[in-house]
Amino acid sequence: MALTVSYFAWVRERMGVSEEVVEPPAGVATMADLVGWLAARDARGALAFAEPARIRGAIDGVMAPPDAVLGREVALFPPVTGG
Image 1 (tube, rainbow, N blue to C red):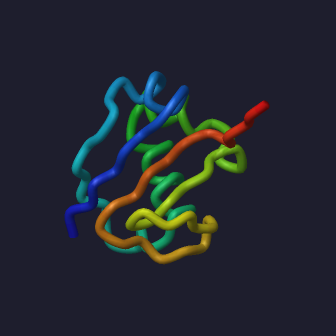
Image 2 (cartoon, rainbow, N blue to C red; image 1 turned 120 degrees about the horizontal axis):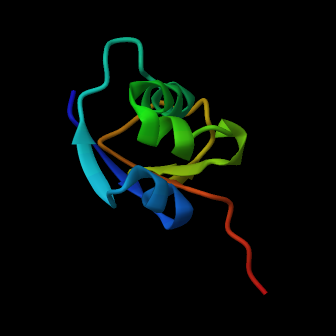
Image 3 (cartoon, rainbow, N blue to C red; image 1 turned 90 degrees about the vertical axis):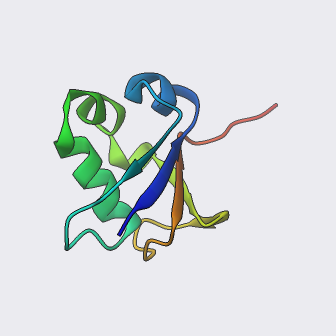
């Protein structure tokens, strides 16, 4: 299943792209699975997702927890702060 993954802020900088279409292997079903797979895929992912607990995400435009089942689009970003 093709999945569009968008990266934001320092996650985008570390991945070197703002968006990509990926084909995760069988068994990658949740946001946490996807982050783990991206981290193991190459050096860029290892750097971007070295601390998976810091990653926030949205699935199909809706904020989602790590155990949420993947949809067609995933956005991955660091925690947002404001002031």
